[in-house]
Image 1 (spheres, helix red, strand yellow):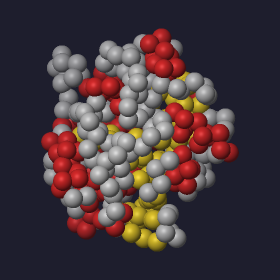
Image 2 (tube, helix red, strand yellow; image 1 turned 45 degrees about the horizontal axis):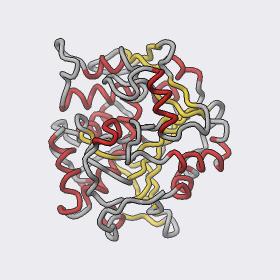
Image 3 (spheres, rainbow, N blue to C red; image 1 turned 90 degrees about the vertical axis):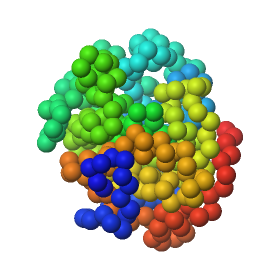
Amino acid sequence: MAKNGNIYVPFEERTGNESIVYFTRDISPEGIMKAYEKVCANMTGKVAVKLHTGEKNGPNFTPASWVKKVMENEPTLKDATIVETNTYYKGDRYTTEEHLDTLKVNGWDFCPVDIMDAEDTVDLPVKGGKWFDHMTCGSHMTGYDSLFVLTHFKGHAMGGFGGSNKNIGIGCADGRIGKGMIHAKDGDAWGVVEEELMEKISESTKATIDFFGKNVAYVNVMRNMSVSCDCEGVKAAPVVTPNVGILASLDICAIDCASVDLVHAMTAEQHHDLWERIQTRHGFRQMSYMKELGMGNDRYILIDLDNGGCVISPKEAVKDVKPFKRIEI
C-alpha cells in the first residue's frame, strides 16, 4: 500500500507476509457465528464486544437482534459486555444520558452496554507513533481481558471507509479528549483530513490493540454498505453497493484490506459510489499505515468457509453478488 492514500495498490503488487482471513457469504447471525468461531480461541476472561450501536433508528448497522443471537449462542460471549464511547459531535450519543436512551431505541437492551467514558478516561501508550505518544480512551476499557471487534463495514464521510480500524480507533477514544486529539487541528474541531486523519485513527487503534495483545478477534460484516457511516443514522445516503458477506481474522490490517479488496473486485457499476468515497478521502492510507506500524499484513489468504475451506480470490468471492436488496430482519 502506498503512502498516498488516494492510490490503490493491487494485491499482487504488495509484499511481505500473509495472514489468514475467513469468508462466508452467509449474511446472518449464523454467518457471524461461522466466522467468529474461526478466530475466538483467545477470547478469554472478561470479554468486551466493540460494535457501532448507531444513531437512533439508523437503517444500516448490524441488527441488535442478530448480535443478541450470537451472544446467546457463543460460549465465550454469553457473559460479554457491549462497549461504546460517547461521540465527539453533538447527536443522539453525545452525552451518556443521550447515549443510553439511544441504546434502548435501537434495541441494545438485551445485555450490559458499557459507555466506557461515562466516568473517566485512561491514557494508553502509542508505541512508534508519529502523531501521538498516547491515546485517551474510556477508562472502563482497562477492566476487560479480551476484545471482540464486530464491525459493520461501510463508507465514511471523512475516513473513506469504516472497518475494524475505524471501529476501534474512533470508537474506543473517549468522546471529548481522545476524539478531539484525532479530529481537531489549528482551532478547527474537524480540521484533520486525508492522510493525517487515517494515520491518527490507526495510531489510536494501535493503543487499544497493544493493550489487549493476542486477545483480540475481528469480524467485518459487509452488508448495507452505504457511503455514510452509521453515525449519520437516518440521514445516511441510500445503499447501492451489493451485500457481500462476512469476514473474520486475527489480523486487523488483513481484514480491512480484504474488505476493501472485495469492494474493488466488484464491477465498476457495482462499487462506483463506495469506491469513490474511499479514494477521494484517501482511505487507503489506513491500510498502508497499519502495516508501517506493525499492526498486521496487507497480504492474506482468503479462506472460503462455504466451500470446504478452499482458497479463493476476492474476484471469486464477489462473482455472484446481486444488486443491493435490503435484508429483512
